[in-house]
Length: 344
Image 1 (spheres, rainbow, N blue to C red):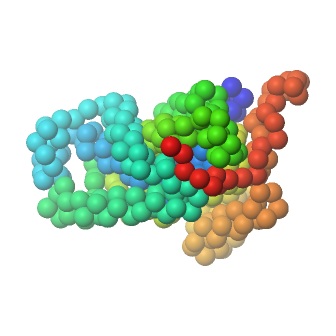
Image 2 (image 1 turned 30 degrees about the vertical axis):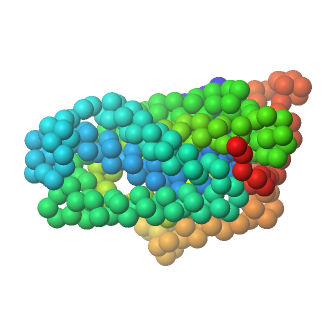
């Protein structure tokens, strides 16, 4: 509730600010959905994933193919199957279908991958990202090829993005406080001990993967309806690094870290983007080279890893004032990939 209230207040304030600030807020909310999806799996399982942006790509292409007007499809993407060529649904339906398709894909790839641990799991997920990126790069829905989609309805506005961000945070909160989420978090602390008391770690990781893929697919669909035109290159290393950096900076073990990290990086990115374009921020004008934003995010992440490994939030959730300390979460573990064995 605290996180949602903060988002509502910030969104209302931003709606009265210049258009450039509103655009940055929309991008920040889309990133929030993506990072919430990543957190559902990484934050609760402790297994780092370098391939979650593949779910984003699937969500973006799914909603794009389904929501482009049928009259435009005949010209833009004549090479797609007939049932796609003759079907056009609304944006909300397209986003939901995108999440479902991403979840199904997450279930399929999760069956073998959730049994991997540590570095092997990260490499396995990165291999999935490479495969998905290669498929969409050579996807030829139009005679020109190149995997580009255009004419996707640009419906992602501020309060629409806010609603989906709240939905993503709600799903993440419900999952982490559910029985499955709590058992998965227990396995994050010590997978061997969890297995020894009968917790089927791989099964719960698979559930986490599916829910995570669903939310990340929603984020991909929101992105598609924000930019309107995109190709496979949009869903590769840049988003992979950005989402992981936000999660690490905010705090990988808490949902509050998702919001705090996203807000922090959104503000930094907005300032640096304005300075890159030669604009003024609160009377301060600087001329910085392109790429400064990425360098700054990388340096911030390194600093956090060195001086505050548990992130800005310290792995804790945001509490209402005067709440009893007895209801707070225990001190979070500093482990991210603490498991040393696969589960049956």
